[in-house]
Length: 192
Image (cartoon, rainbow, N blue to C red; front, side):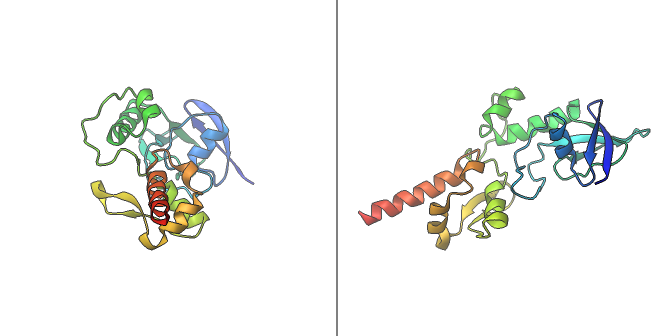
């Protein structure tokens, strides 16, 4: 397999051709925060928390990309903690506050200018993608768009989801767990 040499935060690193910037960073012990990344599902770049600044050596023009989906390239220079990147991450954490307490502490977020509709879901989509890609059930889906977007369960398939629980360990906010538990409890109360 061909190897690619690039620079991340001033450190020369080697990655395999086809790796993403995030994969190269992880392999070389460089932390880039993520919400929607998990090795069990395909990268999607939806959370944008893993944004980094890139440029080619010998060039000044910089771009901001999602490191979980951007492939490594020869002579790529990556910066993971610039002021611009920290500002972007802080805004994302503030938009999702208080559903990300660890990241809120890391970025000094103690309150939000925004009023989230739900605080038990950060809309990472891991449960949706895991149900679709790994379990092949499509029981969990996104309903709505924009600020009205939320994770939901297909009503006729809630029984299957309540007993499966395979995606529960991926859920950092607890919404999918709560929906399934509520459904499971309603089943228990009806059977008594």
